[in-house]
Image (cartoon, rainbow, N blue to C red; front, side, top):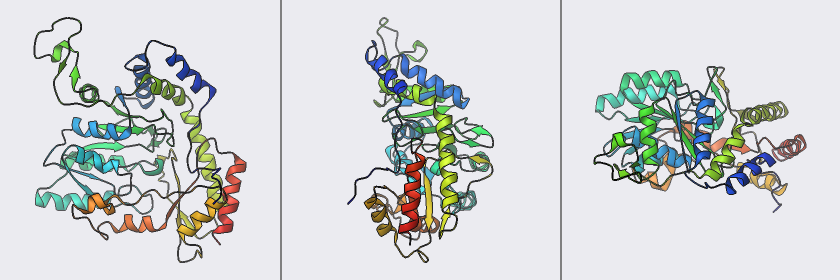
Amino acid sequence: MGKINIPYGKQTISEQDIQAVVDVLRSDWLTQGPSVERFERAVADYCGVNCAVAVNSATSALHIACLAAGLGGGDILWTSPISFVASANCARYCGADVDFVDIDPDTCTMSVEELEKKLVEAEKTGRLPKVVVPVHFAGQSCDMERIAALGEHYGFTVIEDAAHAIGGRYRGQLIGNCRYSAMTVFSFHPVKLITTGEGGMVVSRSEELCSRLVRLRSHGITRDPAEFTFQSHGPWYYEQIELGFNYRMTDIQAALGCSQLLRLDANVARRHELVARYRQAFADLPIRFLSQDSDCYSAYHLFVVMLDCDLIATQREELAAKLRADGIASNVHYIPIHLQPYYRQYGFRPGDFPKAEEYYRHALTLPLYPAMTDAQQQHVIDVFRRVIG
Protein backbone atom coordinates (compact mmCIF):
# COMPACT_ATOMS: atom_id res chain seq x y z
CA MET A 1 0.00 0.00 0.00
CA GLY A 2 1.41 3.37 -1.02
CA LYS A 3 2.25 6.16 1.37
CA ILE A 4 -0.41 8.87 1.56
CA ASN A 5 1.07 12.11 0.25
CA ILE A 6 -2.20 13.89 -0.54
CA PRO A 7 -4.80 13.69 2.25
CA TYR A 8 -8.46 14.43 1.62
CA GLY A 9 -8.21 17.47 3.92
CA LYS A 10 -5.44 19.20 5.80
CA GLN A 11 -4.77 22.21 8.01
CA THR A 12 -2.61 25.08 6.76
CA ILE A 13 -0.33 26.51 9.45
CA SER A 14 1.67 29.67 8.77
CA GLU A 15 4.58 31.23 10.63
CA GLN A 16 2.10 33.89 11.79
CA ASP A 17 -0.05 31.13 13.33
CA ILE A 18 2.95 29.65 15.11
CA GLN A 19 4.01 33.04 16.46
CA ALA A 20 0.48 33.72 17.74
CA VAL A 21 0.57 30.49 19.73
CA VAL A 22 4.10 31.12 21.00
CA ASP A 23 3.06 34.59 22.19
CA VAL A 24 0.31 33.03 24.31
CA LEU A 25 2.67 30.37 25.68
CA ARG A 26 4.94 33.19 26.84
CA SER A 27 2.06 35.17 28.34
CA ASP A 28 0.35 34.94 31.73
CA TRP A 29 -2.80 33.34 30.31
CA LEU A 30 -3.04 29.84 28.83
CA THR A 31 -6.78 29.52 29.43
CA GLN A 32 -9.72 31.75 30.42
CA GLY A 33 -7.73 34.75 29.25
CA PRO A 34 -7.97 37.57 26.72
CA SER A 35 -7.27 35.53 23.57
CA VAL A 36 -10.57 33.68 23.88
CA GLU A 37 -12.54 36.92 24.11
CA ARG A 38 -10.54 38.34 21.21
CA PHE A 39 -11.34 35.31 19.03
CA GLU A 40 -15.01 35.43 19.97
CA ARG A 41 -15.23 39.13 19.12
CA ALA A 42 -13.42 38.59 15.81
CA VAL A 43 -15.82 35.83 14.69
CA ALA A 44 -18.88 37.74 15.90
CA ASP A 45 -17.76 40.82 13.97
CA TYR A 46 -16.97 38.73 10.89
CA CYS A 47 -20.44 37.15 10.89
CA GLY A 48 -22.24 40.34 11.91
CA VAL A 49 -23.80 39.05 15.13
CA ASN A 50 -23.88 40.31 18.69
CA CYS A 51 -21.94 37.55 20.35
CA ALA A 52 -19.99 34.34 20.01
CA VAL A 53 -19.13 31.63 22.53
CA ALA A 54 -15.99 29.55 21.94
CA VAL A 55 -15.87 25.95 23.16
CA ASN A 56 -13.62 22.91 22.86
CA SER A 57 -15.43 21.28 19.92
CA ALA A 58 -18.37 21.74 17.58
CA THR A 59 -19.99 18.77 19.31
CA SER A 60 -19.89 20.70 22.59
CA ALA A 61 -21.25 23.73 20.73
CA LEU A 62 -24.21 21.75 19.43
CA HIS A 63 -24.87 20.33 22.89
CA ILE A 64 -25.02 23.66 24.71
CA ALA A 65 -26.91 25.28 21.83
CA CYS A 66 -29.61 22.63 22.24
CA LEU A 67 -29.71 23.17 26.00
CA ALA A 68 -29.94 26.94 25.52
CA ALA A 69 -32.87 26.32 23.15
CA GLY A 70 -34.64 24.45 25.96
CA LEU A 71 -34.31 20.96 24.48
CA GLY A 72 -34.87 18.21 27.04
CA GLY A 73 -36.59 14.95 27.88
CA GLY A 74 -39.82 14.41 25.94
CA ASP A 75 -38.72 16.78 23.16
CA ILE A 76 -37.58 15.84 19.68
CA LEU A 77 -34.87 17.20 17.40
CA TRP A 78 -34.83 16.75 13.62
CA THR A 79 -31.68 16.90 11.51
CA SER A 80 -30.21 15.52 8.31
CA PRO A 81 -29.21 11.85 8.07
CA ILE A 82 -26.17 12.88 5.99
CA SER A 83 -23.90 14.49 8.53
CA PHE A 84 -21.45 13.48 11.21
CA VAL A 85 -23.21 11.76 14.10
CA ALA A 86 -22.75 14.81 16.37
CA SER A 87 -25.61 16.57 14.56
CA ALA A 88 -27.96 13.99 16.08
CA ASN A 89 -26.09 13.04 19.25
CA CYS A 90 -26.51 16.55 20.66
CA ALA A 91 -30.20 15.77 21.16
CA ARG A 92 -29.49 12.52 22.98
CA TYR A 93 -27.11 14.36 25.35
CA CYS A 94 -30.13 16.48 26.34
CA GLY A 95 -32.37 13.44 26.85
CA ALA A 96 -34.38 14.27 23.73
CA ASP A 97 -35.42 12.04 20.85
CA VAL A 98 -34.04 12.26 17.31
CA ASP A 99 -35.61 12.01 13.89
CA PHE A 100 -34.34 12.85 10.43
CA VAL A 101 -35.44 14.71 7.33
CA ASP A 102 -34.32 13.27 3.99
CA ILE A 103 -31.99 15.23 1.75
CA ASP A 104 -32.30 17.04 -1.54
CA PRO A 105 -30.30 14.64 -3.75
CA ASP A 106 -28.93 17.48 -5.86
CA THR A 107 -27.30 19.40 -2.99
CA CYS A 108 -27.27 16.84 -0.15
CA THR A 109 -28.71 19.49 2.17
CA MET A 110 -31.98 19.08 4.06
CA SER A 111 -34.92 18.94 1.65
CA VAL A 112 -37.37 21.71 2.50
CA GLU A 113 -40.12 19.79 0.69
CA GLU A 114 -39.48 16.71 2.84
CA LEU A 115 -39.32 18.89 5.95
CA GLU A 116 -42.67 20.49 5.21
CA LYS A 117 -44.34 17.13 4.49
CA LYS A 118 -42.98 15.69 7.71
CA LEU A 119 -44.15 18.72 9.71
CA VAL A 120 -47.69 18.40 8.37
CA GLU A 121 -47.82 14.77 9.51
CA ALA A 122 -46.13 15.51 12.85
CA GLU A 123 -48.67 18.19 13.65
CA LYS A 124 -51.43 15.62 13.27
CA THR A 125 -49.80 13.30 15.79
CA GLY A 126 -48.69 16.01 18.21
CA ARG A 127 -44.97 15.21 17.77
CA LEU A 128 -43.59 18.40 16.26
CA PRO A 129 -39.87 19.01 16.76
CA LYS A 130 -38.63 21.40 19.45
CA VAL A 131 -35.42 21.99 17.46
CA VAL A 132 -34.46 21.54 13.80
CA VAL A 133 -30.76 21.39 12.90
CA PRO A 134 -30.18 21.99 9.17
CA VAL A 135 -26.67 20.90 8.12
CA HIS A 136 -24.80 23.06 5.60
CA PHE A 137 -23.28 20.06 3.90
CA ALA A 138 -19.83 20.41 2.28
CA GLY A 139 -19.98 24.17 2.82
CA GLN A 140 -23.26 25.06 1.06
CA SER A 141 -26.10 26.60 3.05
CA CYS A 142 -29.49 24.98 3.29
CA ASP A 143 -32.45 27.05 2.09
CA MET A 144 -32.61 28.91 5.37
CA GLU A 145 -35.32 31.44 4.52
CA ARG A 146 -37.84 28.68 3.84
CA ILE A 147 -36.73 26.65 6.87
CA ALA A 148 -37.04 29.73 9.09
CA ALA A 149 -40.56 30.37 7.76
CA LEU A 150 -41.54 26.81 8.67
CA GLY A 151 -39.99 27.30 12.10
CA GLU A 152 -42.11 30.39 12.62
CA HIS A 153 -45.24 28.54 11.55
CA TYR A 154 -44.68 25.31 13.48
CA GLY A 155 -42.90 26.78 16.50
CA PHE A 156 -39.49 25.08 16.40
CA THR A 157 -36.08 26.63 17.07
CA VAL A 158 -33.56 26.56 14.24
CA ILE A 159 -29.90 25.84 15.04
CA GLU A 160 -27.67 25.91 11.96
CA ASP A 161 -24.98 23.23 11.87
CA ALA A 162 -22.38 25.19 9.89
CA ALA A 163 -19.43 22.98 10.87
CA HIS A 164 -18.56 22.89 7.14
CA ALA A 165 -19.47 26.42 6.26
CA ILE A 166 -17.75 29.38 7.94
CA GLY A 167 -16.76 31.72 5.11
CA GLY A 168 -19.69 30.67 2.94
CA ARG A 169 -22.64 32.89 2.07
CA TYR A 170 -26.40 32.60 1.70
CA ARG A 171 -28.24 35.23 -0.32
CA GLY A 172 -25.19 37.46 -0.24
CA GLN A 173 -24.77 37.36 3.54
CA LEU A 174 -22.22 35.41 5.53
CA ILE A 175 -23.29 32.11 7.02
CA GLY A 176 -23.45 32.69 10.76
CA ASN A 177 -25.33 35.98 10.65
CA CYS A 178 -28.29 34.16 12.27
CA ARG A 179 -30.87 36.07 10.26
CA TYR A 180 -32.80 32.82 9.83
CA SER A 181 -31.86 30.98 13.03
CA ALA A 182 -31.47 31.37 16.76
CA MET A 183 -27.88 30.09 16.72
CA THR A 184 -25.21 28.87 14.32
CA VAL A 185 -22.48 26.38 15.18
CA PHE A 186 -18.98 26.29 13.65
CA SER A 187 -16.21 23.68 13.82
CA PHE A 188 -12.48 24.41 13.97
CA HIS A 189 -11.20 20.84 13.56
CA PRO A 190 -7.97 20.66 11.50
CA VAL A 191 -9.71 19.63 8.26
CA LYS A 192 -12.23 22.48 8.48
CA LEU A 193 -12.06 25.98 6.97
CA ILE A 194 -10.00 27.36 9.86
CA THR A 195 -8.60 25.44 12.79
CA THR A 196 -7.88 25.82 16.48
CA GLY A 197 -6.65 22.21 16.70
CA GLU A 198 -9.92 21.10 18.23
CA GLY A 199 -12.61 23.67 18.85
CA GLY A 200 -16.02 25.02 18.05
CA MET A 201 -18.21 28.08 18.50
CA VAL A 202 -21.84 29.13 18.80
CA VAL A 203 -22.80 32.52 17.39
CA SER A 204 -26.10 34.31 17.94
CA ARG A 205 -27.85 37.66 17.77
CA SER A 206 -29.33 37.00 21.19
CA GLU A 207 -27.37 38.27 24.20
CA GLU A 208 -29.69 36.24 26.44
CA LEU A 209 -28.82 33.00 24.64
CA CYS A 210 -25.11 33.82 24.69
CA SER A 211 -25.22 34.53 28.42
CA ARG A 212 -26.61 31.06 29.03
CA LEU A 213 -24.15 29.48 26.60
CA VAL A 214 -21.27 31.05 28.53
CA ARG A 215 -22.58 29.53 31.77
CA LEU A 216 -23.17 26.13 30.23
CA ARG A 217 -19.63 25.89 28.85
CA SER A 218 -18.17 26.52 32.32
CA HIS A 219 -19.96 24.35 34.91
CA GLY A 220 -23.15 26.47 35.01
CA ILE A 221 -21.26 29.07 37.04
CA THR A 222 -21.93 32.81 37.06
CA ARG A 223 -19.94 35.69 38.53
CA ASP A 224 -22.60 38.23 37.59
CA PRO A 225 -24.14 39.72 40.79
CA ALA A 226 -27.41 40.26 38.93
CA GLU A 227 -27.76 36.46 38.68
CA PHE A 228 -26.83 35.62 42.28
CA THR A 229 -29.28 33.90 44.60
CA PHE A 230 -27.39 34.91 47.72
CA GLN A 231 -25.37 37.94 48.76
CA SER A 232 -21.78 37.98 47.56
CA HIS A 233 -19.11 36.99 50.09
CA GLY A 234 -16.40 39.03 48.36
CA PRO A 235 -14.59 39.55 45.02
CA TRP A 236 -13.90 35.79 44.75
CA TYR A 237 -17.57 34.89 44.93
CA TYR A 238 -19.38 32.83 42.28
CA GLU A 239 -22.50 30.68 42.15
CA GLN A 240 -23.38 27.55 40.22
CA ILE A 241 -26.94 28.23 39.13
CA GLU A 242 -27.40 25.28 36.77
CA LEU A 243 -25.65 22.09 35.70
CA GLY A 244 -23.00 22.96 33.13
CA PHE A 245 -19.88 21.45 31.64
CA ASN A 246 -16.18 22.09 31.21
CA TYR A 247 -16.30 22.88 27.49
CA ARG A 248 -13.90 25.81 27.55
CA MET A 249 -11.48 26.68 24.74
CA THR A 250 -7.90 27.51 25.75
CA ASP A 251 -6.15 30.76 24.90
CA ILE A 252 -3.61 28.71 22.95
CA GLN A 253 -6.38 27.47 20.64
CA ALA A 254 -8.04 30.88 20.44
CA ALA A 255 -4.80 32.61 19.42
CA LEU A 256 -4.43 30.12 16.57
CA GLY A 257 -8.06 30.77 15.59
CA CYS A 258 -7.56 34.56 15.52
CA SER A 259 -4.58 34.16 13.21
CA GLN A 260 -6.35 31.63 10.96
CA LEU A 261 -9.43 33.84 10.63
CA LEU A 262 -7.35 36.47 8.83
CA ARG A 263 -6.86 34.02 5.91
CA LEU A 264 -10.36 32.55 5.83
CA ASP A 265 -11.69 34.44 2.80
CA ALA A 266 -8.51 33.79 0.80
CA ASN A 267 -8.63 30.10 1.71
CA VAL A 268 -12.25 29.78 0.60
CA ALA A 269 -11.39 31.54 -2.68
CA ARG A 270 -8.57 29.02 -3.23
CA ARG A 271 -11.00 26.17 -2.61
CA HIS A 272 -13.24 27.61 -5.33
CA GLU A 273 -10.29 27.64 -7.76
CA LEU A 274 -9.50 24.01 -7.03
CA VAL A 275 -13.14 22.93 -7.37
CA ALA A 276 -13.43 24.72 -10.72
CA ARG A 277 -10.37 22.80 -11.98
CA TYR A 278 -11.83 19.49 -10.79
CA ARG A 279 -15.16 20.15 -12.45
CA GLN A 280 -13.51 21.03 -15.75
CA ALA A 281 -11.15 18.05 -15.64
CA PHE A 282 -13.92 15.55 -14.84
CA ALA A 283 -16.68 16.99 -17.02
CA ASP A 284 -16.59 14.04 -19.45
CA LEU A 285 -16.52 11.28 -16.82
CA PRO A 286 -19.50 9.17 -15.65
CA ILE A 287 -19.78 11.07 -12.38
CA ARG A 288 -22.05 13.77 -11.02
CA PHE A 289 -21.24 16.81 -8.90
CA LEU A 290 -23.37 18.23 -6.12
CA SER A 291 -25.37 21.19 -7.38
CA GLN A 292 -24.54 24.69 -6.20
CA ASP A 293 -27.60 26.79 -5.48
CA SER A 294 -27.47 30.24 -7.10
CA ASP A 295 -28.40 31.77 -3.72
CA CYS A 296 -25.29 30.25 -2.13
CA TYR A 297 -21.54 30.80 -2.13
CA SER A 298 -20.17 27.55 -0.79
CA ALA A 299 -17.26 27.43 1.63
CA TYR A 300 -16.32 24.17 -0.16
CA HIS A 301 -15.19 22.26 2.89
CA LEU A 302 -15.52 19.05 0.84
CA PHE A 303 -15.41 18.09 -2.82
CA VAL A 304 -17.81 15.20 -3.30
CA VAL A 305 -18.33 13.32 -6.55
CA MET A 306 -21.22 10.97 -7.20
CA LEU A 307 -20.05 7.81 -8.97
CA ASP A 308 -22.26 6.24 -11.61
CA CYS A 309 -21.69 2.65 -10.58
CA ASP A 310 -23.53 1.32 -13.62
CA LEU A 311 -20.95 2.91 -15.93
CA ILE A 312 -17.78 2.72 -13.84
CA ALA A 313 -16.02 -0.61 -14.05
CA THR A 314 -14.08 0.03 -10.83
CA GLN A 315 -16.34 -0.10 -7.80
CA ARG A 316 -15.92 2.49 -5.05
CA GLU A 317 -13.92 0.42 -2.58
CA GLU A 318 -11.54 -0.76 -5.28
CA LEU A 319 -11.31 2.76 -6.70
CA ALA A 320 -10.39 4.17 -3.28
CA ALA A 321 -7.72 1.48 -2.86
CA LYS A 322 -6.19 2.34 -6.24
CA LEU A 323 -6.10 6.03 -5.34
CA ARG A 324 -4.44 5.14 -2.04
CA ALA A 325 -1.81 3.08 -3.85
CA ASP A 326 -0.86 6.27 -5.69
CA GLY A 327 -0.61 8.28 -2.48
CA ILE A 328 -4.10 9.84 -2.64
CA ALA A 329 -6.56 9.66 0.26
CA SER A 330 -10.27 9.69 -0.43
CA ASN A 331 -13.16 9.41 2.01
CA VAL A 332 -16.93 9.09 2.19
CA HIS A 333 -19.02 11.76 3.95
CA TYR A 334 -21.14 10.27 5.47
CA ILE A 335 -22.65 6.94 6.42
CA PRO A 336 -26.31 7.86 7.05
CA ILE A 337 -26.73 8.43 10.78
CA HIS A 338 -29.94 6.43 11.02
CA LEU A 339 -28.10 3.30 9.85
CA GLN A 340 -25.60 3.41 12.72
CA PRO A 341 -26.09 0.61 15.27
CA TYR A 342 -26.80 3.11 18.05
CA TYR A 343 -29.72 4.65 16.15
CA ARG A 344 -31.10 1.34 14.89
CA GLN A 345 -31.97 0.51 18.49
CA TYR A 346 -34.54 3.32 18.25
CA GLY A 347 -36.27 1.66 15.33
CA PHE A 348 -34.55 3.24 12.31
CA ARG A 349 -34.08 0.86 9.39
CA PRO A 350 -32.72 0.80 5.82
CA GLY A 351 -35.26 2.41 3.52
CA ASP A 352 -36.37 5.06 6.02
CA PHE A 353 -34.57 7.88 4.18
CA PRO A 354 -34.05 6.57 0.64
CA LYS A 355 -32.45 9.67 -0.86
CA ALA A 356 -29.79 9.75 1.85
CA GLU A 357 -29.13 6.05 1.39
CA GLU A 358 -28.87 6.40 -2.38
CA TYR A 359 -26.43 9.27 -1.94
CA TYR A 360 -24.26 7.14 0.34
CA ARG A 361 -24.06 4.34 -2.23
CA HIS A 362 -22.46 6.66 -4.79
CA ALA A 363 -20.53 9.37 -2.89
CA LEU A 364 -16.76 9.76 -2.78
CA THR A 365 -14.81 12.70 -1.32
CA LEU A 366 -11.63 13.72 -3.15
CA PRO A 367 -8.78 15.82 -1.71
CA LEU A 368 -9.45 19.53 -1.23
CA TYR A 369 -7.54 21.98 0.97
CA PRO A 370 -6.06 25.46 0.39
CA ALA A 371 -2.41 24.38 0.56
CA MET A 372 -2.95 21.80 -2.18
CA THR A 373 -0.68 22.76 -5.07
CA ASP A 374 -1.69 22.74 -8.70
CA ALA A 375 0.78 19.89 -9.24
CA GLN A 376 -0.77 17.83 -6.43
CA GLN A 377 -4.24 18.41 -7.81
CA GLN A 378 -3.10 17.45 -11.29
CA HIS A 379 -1.78 14.19 -9.84
CA VAL A 380 -5.20 13.52 -8.29
CA ILE A 381 -6.90 14.33 -11.60
CA ASP A 382 -4.59 12.10 -13.63
CA VAL A 383 -4.82 9.13 -11.27
CA PHE A 384 -8.59 9.44 -10.83
CA ARG A 385 -9.14 9.55 -14.58
CA ARG A 386 -6.93 6.50 -15.02
CA VAL A 387 -8.39 4.34 -12.26
CA ILE A 388 -12.01 5.17 -12.95
CA GLY A 389 -11.53 3.18 -16.12
